[in-house]
Image (cartoon, rainbow, N blue to C red; front, side):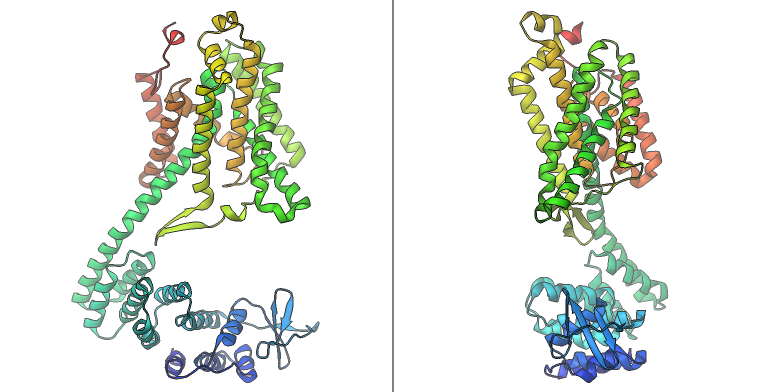
Amino acid sequence: MTKWVLWIGLLLASSAHALTAEQALAIARGETDARIEALGQAVAEGDDKTAAYLQALADEAVKIKDAQLFVLRDDKVTDPVTGVALNLPDDVEDVMLNNRLRGELDTALAAMRLFSTDVQQRLQSAQALLKEPQAAQRALVEKALAAENDPAVRAVLQQALAAVDLSSPEAAQRRAAAQVLAASAQPDVLLLLNQQLAQEEDVSVKSALKIAIEQVKRGLQLGENLGTLFTGLSLGSILLLVALGLAITYGLMGVINMAHGELMMIGAYATYVVQGLFRSHLPGLFDYYLLAALPVAFAASALVGALMERTILKHLYGRPLETLLATWGISLILMQTVRSLFGAQNVGVENPSWMSGSIQLMSNLQLPWNRVLIIGFAAAVLLGMSLLIAKTRLGLFVRGVTQNRPMASCMGINTARIDTYAFALGSGIAGLAGCALSQIGNVGPDLGQNYIVDAFMVVVLGGVGQLAGTVYAALGLGLVNKLLEGWTGAVLAKIAVLVFIIVFIQKRPQGIFAMKGRSAEA
């Protein structure tokens, strides 16, 4: 800590000087205290070259042999002081860093970036100093605050200054710091306030800390609530994708398809295969493999579904119990086939770069891009399926066969062909669901078993044959499940949802939306 006081004072008073070989070597080897002192001197006199060297140390990209240092970046070896290209000897050693040195390096890098011309770098530096406030940083933060013009960076610097004052020996200063931090809705600030409260002895400061903690908690509550809603919407969109295909095969055709989960699994493995082909043959286009995987997943699952319908299920229409047993046997066959082809272990499907990362909306609210895009994808599939059923010739035939098969046949519709098309469509949508699920978890032979029960609950709760009911049921179950998890835990939440569905179906067997038409009146 005393070393920080020394070199921060130098940093505030000095102009920039180039890194010297002696300084670089002193930071890289020797006793910890001496290395920290050399680090402070280098930062106080440093420039961009010093920052690059310190970053290389933090990244463990610096090697040493005797008195020569080597920086390894992008398959190039250079001298950290002169930048001259070097040959890397065989017997170089790693520069050793203990936890204390790592912490000092991180704080030194944050301090150097505090005066960067890049606003984003200054903001990240201020946030880093807020997370780990030290009394020796006060003068540095004050100087940066006086020179800062960006409102967002100024706000974080003011909080960082208050965080430093939170450990001040003066009670009035600690109390004022607590009042400043009360307006911050950040988890790191809540942690600092709780830590200070645990060791605080002054009664008035304790009172101010408790008030500040409550205010910060209230500020964080909004982010937590929005996060819960997003998680529920994400789960609901996944259930919707899974249940849409089942809404056709079960809701419209009356087939209890226990192999629906395995059709999803086929779509997920088709995505895995396409990923492997792109990685092997088109590595430069790897980020676009998912766009190619979507039609492949749809086609693979649709083909298997059509084969199931033409060979087995067409003989079992009107006998739901027998379709249940037959499709259950098919699901076992499909799972074992996948185990034989790909192995029993899960396989990993990598997100494209444009699906990685997250959107930071609040300090405690991050929305992962993969889930955001899956919500949008579910909406697009729902829209496409609705238009297909309501506006196209195939959709008209499907609705006609569903409502009155004998009359549709009398009107010249090839009902057997329509059955195959409809089942293939539902199976293909299951494949799209599997493709989407591959982006948020591992792909394995048991993938479909995790969703098949929930998918049936969605279709039954929404109303057999009703797409609108499927949407309401999927989103409703997703939101209710996640809201209950926060109060009761995951297992009890599942039980509560299941009990609710049982009671609801007892009172309203037709689901949320009852099917209208002659078939419902029969």
